[in-house]
Image 1 (spheres, helix red, strand yellow):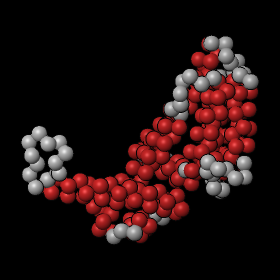
Image 2 (tube, rainbow, N blue to C red):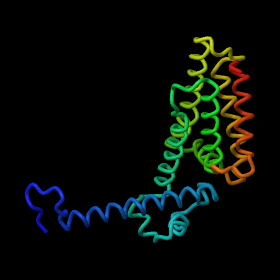
Image 3 (cartoon, helix red, strand yellow):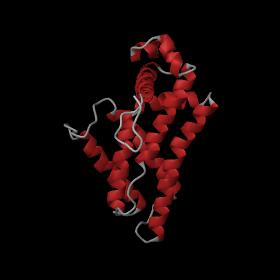
Image 4 (cartoon, rainbow, N blue to C red):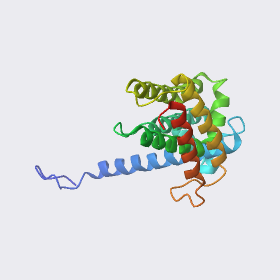
Amino acid sequence: MVSEPGNDDAAAPDWATARQRRATADNVTRGALLEAAARVFARRGYAATSVDAIATEARVSRTAFYAYFRSKHETFVVVAGQVRDDFLHAHELPGNLDPRAMGRASIAAFLTAHAQYSALLTVIEHEAGADSEIDAIWHEMQSRPARRMARYVRDLAAQDQADPVAEPEMLAESMFALFRRFGAELAVETVDAADPTGRFARRVDELTAVYLRLIGAE
């Protein structure tokens, strides 16, 4: 079918429609493979995961896997990168919140991320010791949010809105250790927006209280 000149509503050529459908299908399949890989890596760890296991989890053939990824390692690097991006996104909050609201929102976001990815974090941390690509991702995931938090606390102190009990860098490291600890605990349960048991909300309240006490902004 040939579109008429000047008619923006004319149908696209058949080849263009077919190409768009293929691209959409490719994105869906690739996304399904990555989601499947994340589940298998979290359950089995890196060493015990195979291409066959990922393909089976995604309900595709081994051949289909290799149409999108060259190896298990490439898949793991992409999965680890996605986890990193989610962690960095968790700290991107509006800058106009007061320290208490900002603290609670940040803690809720990070605790959610730690609970969601608890098992994968263990695998990523383990592989970081032997893989330079994964080590770079792990380091960025840990260091960038901590630096942001430390910088934020320093800014609050400079504005006389906080009186930290220790160096901001130490406080940030302490808080992220708590996120990891309680995120692993909450990962055993289903953490969702409804929070039927109220346990997640209580942990957020408790960690927010600790944070505000440490930075001297109660």
